[in-house]
Each structure stands twice: as C-alpha cells, then as structure tokens.
Length: 386
Ligand code: CTP
Image (tube, rainbow, N blue to C red; front, side, top):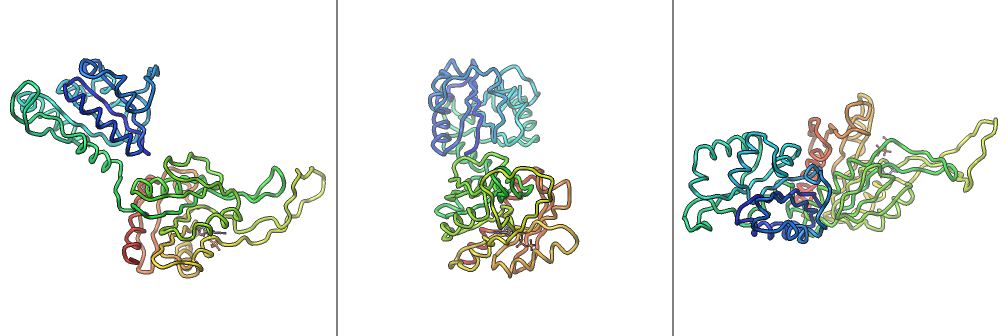
C-alpha cells in the first residue's frame, strides 16, 4: 500500500476526483486528500475524506505528509502556474514543493486557456522537472465549448498512478516468501547473539513484490523498520523459528531470503537471566540449519530461490558464486558488507546479481530500486522455469 496525496483544485472536474480517490482506496492505497478552497466550491472536502475513509484532519501540516506519489486532479491553470513558479499559497502548491517523489498532474480547463502559450510554458516547466501529465482530453467542456481541456478519466489517471508507483500485475497469483532482518539466538532471558541486519532490504523486496500483485509473506526477524502494509507478517526471531516458518511455506513460487540468519546458536540456553560473576563465561555454539539450503533440497518445479551473500574481502564474489551451487538456488545477490556507505544500516546498496548464466553489477542505488531490479531478475527466472 502506498501513500498518495491527492490534490484537488477548483474545477467542475473535482467531482471526477471522487472516483479517483475511490479507485485508489479500492486498490489498497492510503489517500490523503488536499482540497483547495476553489475545489470546495464544487465538492466539499468531507466527501473526499469520507471516500478516503479518514476523518477530516485538523493537522495543520497534513499536506506535508511524506508520500509515495502526489497526484493533482483536476489541476487548474492557476495551480499549474503556481507549480511552475514554485509558489506556495495553497495546500496543493505547498505539498508540491515539499514532496519528493513522483508527481502526476491531470489538468482541466477551458480549451483556450489550455492552448495559451503561458499555460503551455508552465506545462513544459513542470514536465522538465519530472512531473508526469495525463490528459487533458478532447470533448465538450462544462461551459459548452469543444476542444482540448477535459480532465482525463479517473480510470486513466488511476492507471498512471499505478505505473508511477511501480505497480504491475506481473506477479499476480504468485506466492512470494521473503525473509528480512537478523535472527537473535538467546544466551539467556535477556542476552542474545545477533547481527546488524536492519531488515530494510527484505522489506523493500516484500513491498516491490506486493506492488506487482503477489501474495507476500514476510518472515520478520527483529526488524528495525516497519513492515510494508498489505503483506502477511510472521515473526521469526530465531533461526529455528525461521526454518519452521519457511518449511511450512516451501511451496512459494518465489523465495527471497534476505534475512541474516545466524549460522550458530548457543548450545545451552538459560531460561533465567544469568547473574554476573567474576569468572569468564564460555559459550559453546552449535550450527543452525541453513534455511535456504533446506528449501533448496526440497525445491519444487518452477520455483525460484534467491539467496543473499553478505561478504567481506576480495574473494567475496567467488564465495557468492559457490553459494549458488551449494545451496541450489537460482540467484545469489552479493554485497560487500565491509563498505561503510552501503549495506547494513544504509538506505542504499550496491550488489552483484550472480546466476548460472553470469554476473551483473547493479550500481549504488536506494534499496527500493535495488529491490525492483532483483525482483525483475527473479521474474525472468520464473518465466524461464515456466
Ligand atoms: N541463510 C539461511 N540459513 C542460515 C544461514 C544463511 O537461510 N542458517 C541464507 C541467508 O538468508 C542468505 C544466504 O543463506 O540468503 C547466505 O547466507 P551467508 O550467511 O552469507 O552464507 P553461509 O551459507 O552462512 O556461508 P558462509 O557464512 O560460510 O559464507
């Protein structure tokens, strides 16, 4: 589920924005309506809040909410001019200045206003800064003129929203199992052996898969980031819990094992808190079961298994390649965790995708973009298996 700011400015097409909000909500998105006073001359803000299943907000800064997409429908010539010039004297214009991410504009105005060079220059200005424009279409306007100026239909605007949010149906009907985070192996009631994985990469993979229509289960090992909405979350704090949950879902079409699963756990687990004393504490560790390898041994036809190799040092890539065959997986995503600028607590990553047919380096990028590339490759492998 993405969060979408829906700006509604003053035009008769505001009534069609109701349908857009309904479609977005039905598609599982969180909608924050931003209704200008001009729009309220046509449709009351309460209508949009009701359709968005929200109570009207008294939050003064609701328009500054961080969101995945800003869509303005209808966009008047006036607000378009404000956006083009970076003005900020209405909710929508302010939101547009503060928003970082895709912007979709659905202009609606009188055809002569649309054709005016001033309007066209403003369209070019916002387009050159990356805004996507949908419509306007040709037809009869509310004031009885014919020409280009009608707002695009809500279904068409919604389809562009989905594209900009990276939503497709390419994984519709597919079960995707993702693991994320790092397991913690208890030493006693309060202490554990853990690792530095935040879960960001796995959460990004779960989110991308869901946006492509998959049924996603997320095996969550002590995440430090919130899981994405719209996925089933199973808490798997230890390697043992992760193994059990993964084997119960071993029929998944695609498995993305991004979690850092402990390779060892304490042999002896003390139920109470071990009191401190002056002696040394010797802990004996035993190997855990390898979850990915266990899935690899039981793999079913057509299934695609993806493993991750967090390595350090110059021969890391060679070890990643070796994991491909040892764990019987289709893709190993290698990253060098010795680098401080990527990996563990970072929002960015740089990886090499290792498959039987070769290697592909993905340059440093935000984890959600890396996740999209990994899922693209996994989808290619799924198609090959079919
Ligand atoms: N993995 C797993 N179960 C484990 C350990 C690891 O499923 N008990 C998975 C991880 O989720 C990851 C992949 O195996 O997808 C690679 O994990 P890593 O620890 O890098 O590899 P190991 O097989 O433990 O190899 P080594 O530590 O010897 O390099």
